[in-house]
Image (cartoon, rainbow, N blue to C red):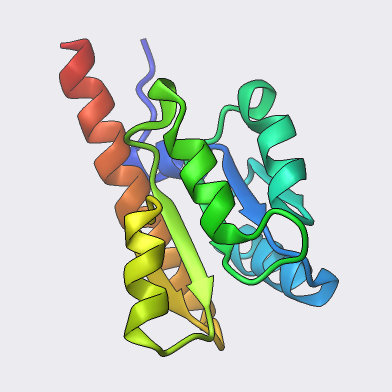
Length: 143
């Protein structure tokens, strides 16, 4: 039986990118693809994210906070309201520097932050760490 390497396992994890700006959505997707991530889905808002959660079954969500319609706060809260997503990593991307906004994001269910402008190596490092932790926890629960 051939085993998958830990990095390959991380790179195969489904990651959902939720970003209303077309250029930013493309930038995030390409930044991760260029580092080997190969199971990405990018959507334009929180409503679209919620529609695809069950079918796509992401192992991590990269979530913009400021979006029209269902913003990142509401999307994060809605994700957390489903028991199957209680430990899903939600990496919030934002240009907000106000502590109140960051605290509100954590209260709504964010796991971590990445500040805009996004640096591809930092993005991949944060995604990799959260996916590795998620896989470790799933393996422990399975064991």
